[in-house]
Image 1 (tube, rainbow, N blue to C red):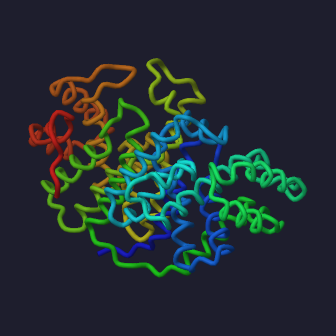
Image 2: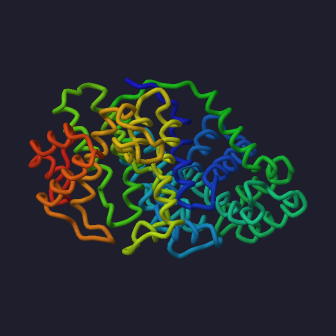
Image 3: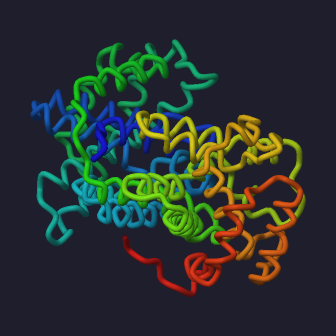
Length: 417
């Protein structure tokens, strides 16, 4: 069993979502913070207010593309908003620890006037979903006051304009009781000034300390990691299922090489999340068929360090961040982001590197077609000869090549452990 603070986990998930927008940082945090403050004004319980905080932080979990994120944050209404709600609800439903947020996420872009027609949706949940809708749109109006990592001072004088933009939508897009509660909450300067990025991070960090860590079952951890992996791989159809298959190959190789118990679970989780930093990379770069520019390559180069930082928040007392963050290191010390040499690279990171390269070479990519199994083995053998890849790990993969090929290929279902 591994100790995990659910608030810490949701905060890490939200930080990874921030990367999807590239420039639109902290959107989920502000939405959650606003929702919890309005919930307090409404007299809702502390537990329900915390639920709204977390719902707001997770509300855009179905967003994987920069273009989609920008549509959502450029206007008060967008016809294409429904798709990410459906995806997000499906992702959360598959993760028991977060399934309680499913319906809020599913309906957070539905107008209040339409929610009564949704079959089976509890009235309290409908109101909660509409609260997320309201503060989500309030944050769209707040965004022009945020730049350079700071909140502009003139929000103090102009915040009433945001409230007045939302009032005419009462009764149709938003529940009247929520609009009035938002107006009362937003009447104080403190409400708006608490959106200052540094203050917001302090507030959310302090809430982490109020939530005691809990022992989380291994299966729940795997499903939480799988939830993140689905969003990562949805960045491009070229990387569909890449993370889950790297995880399965890594686990198989580690087991054959004598690892067992929690080590197998942790290397599987590291495989599922090894590319979480790629959420920061615009999909146009991931899908580019030609050579990358210097600036575009910088996006790619930093993704493994972003992975390391996100996983340090989620699994700080485990080796998972180290293993996943080092999957682009090589034994010559010429990899990234740490430039570690062979003496500093753990076996688990070496396994992840081999599994990552093997699965990627067997997938079509925008800049090349997939390779055959023989071509992949020849290519990876040359990397061992050059001193870049671990020869022992590759020899195990070659010995297990039929099993690894099945785990790597989308034509075959993945096993459940």
